[in-house]
Image (cartoon, rainbow, N blue to C red):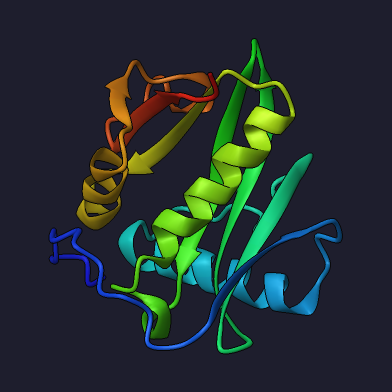
Length: 162
């Protein structure tokens, strides 16, 4: 999605989409996607310079016809909560429902790990991300952790599992 595009109605993928959980955070496809994630964030937030790999996270990679097009990380932050980190879909994979599929895979894994909710932080300069998360059931929550005092942050959460 383009930064100004708030529509969340995805089109169906025109190719084969697979979502794989990765154990190795140094996987070349994942590293390429994480670098693209940070580049996208740097365009929106020029002073933001995080490490692409979030420690203690497990990652998922989406592939379209075998080519890596998206990623997301899951980090256990305690208290039965998982956190979404480094959600990204490359331009070639956008508007195809891939982001929602990545989040679904992450939520299923979080439930397998015994987590009862998933939270996330996104920024006010990412209206398409905010629209996506709200469309798939995430609701605004109080800012948490390092985002507590950030005027650029918006936090969301969702109860998962049964």
